Length: 386
Image (cartoon, rainbow, N blue to C red; front, side, top):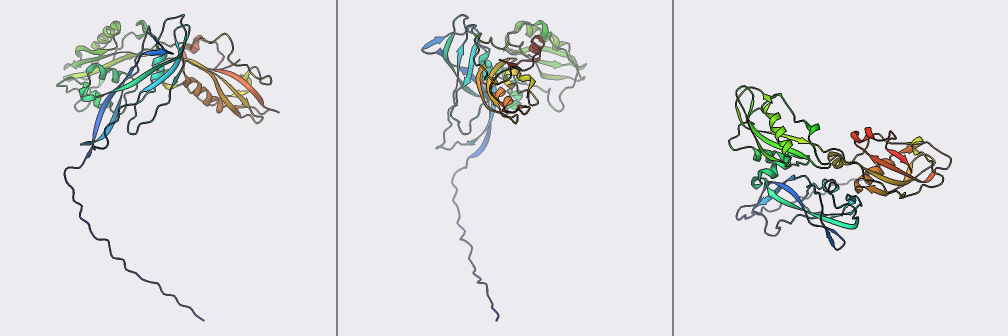
C-alpha cells in the first residue's frame, strides 16, 4: 500500500503601496559640544550653614550630545540633575565619611561626577568644631563650547576629565588667526619645565598655567603670553620663563598653545580615632599578613590618586576552611566611601591557606598610600592587624 501527499500552494499578493505625505522639514541629529562646570551650594550641617576656610573646585568636563534640529515640541530639554554629598566634619576641620547620595538617572544626560568627592576632601573648615549630618549639593552648569570664556576652557583642558568634546574645546581656545596646528603640529626639539619641587602648592589642589606663543623661523618660542591660570603667580612666571627657553622645529607659526600643570603634594590619610571601631573575633589570627594572600594590583580610587589623597578602610570578614573570604563588610572608610569600596573588592578576592575550621570575625585595616607617603610610612604593607 502506498500513500501520497501533495503540498498546498497558496499565492499571497503583495501589500498595496501606500504613499506617505511628508510635510515640512524633518528633524536631524546635530552634534553639540558643551563644557560642564559643577558649582556648589552652601554647606549645611543640620539646620546650620557652615562656612569653609578652604574650597577646591571640581574639575571641569565636557559632554558631546546629538540633539534634534529643530527640537521635537513634545520633548523639551531636561534640566541637569544635581548631585548631593553627605559627610561629616572632623575636629581637625577635614571632611570625613564622604558619600555620594544616589541620584535619579536622566536619559540622554551624563556628566562625569567622579571628582566631586575628591574635591570635597580638599576643603577645610574651622578646626575644633566637629559637625555631623553635613551635606553639599553640586549642580552642573552647561555652557556651549562656542560661548565658553577662555578661562573656563583653559581650566577644562588643564585637568584630567576633559571628556568627549576636548577637541572642540582646544580648537575654540586657539587664538584668532592661529596657523600653528595646520598640517603637522610643530615638533618640539627642546622642552623646559618650571621647578615644580620649589613651588608651594596646597594638598588636593591642581596648579596650571595655559600660555600662547608664536614660533620664529629659527624655532624659538616668542611672544609668550599667559592666557589663563589657576592663580599661582610664582608658577605662572616660572611657566612663561620655561616656555621661552623651548625650541621647536624651524618654521614660522602663529597662535600656538602650551600648558603646564603641577600635581598636588600628597595629602595624608585622616587621623584614625583612638578607640578601635571594631574588635576582631577570638579565633581570628592576630597577624593576617601571615595567612592572607592579596590579589595582584592595588585598587587605589583613581580620582583620589589624581589629587594625591590617601585614605584607609576598616573591614570585617570571615575566612572559610578552604581559604575563601566571605561576609565582607566595611566598618569605616575615610575620607570617603570610595576607599571602603576599593578595599572591600580587594578583600573579597583575597585567599588564605586552608584551615580546619576557618576564621570568623576578622578585622583589618587597608591603607591607601601614594609612593611618596609609603617611603615615610612603616614597611608593614597594606594590611594591618587590629
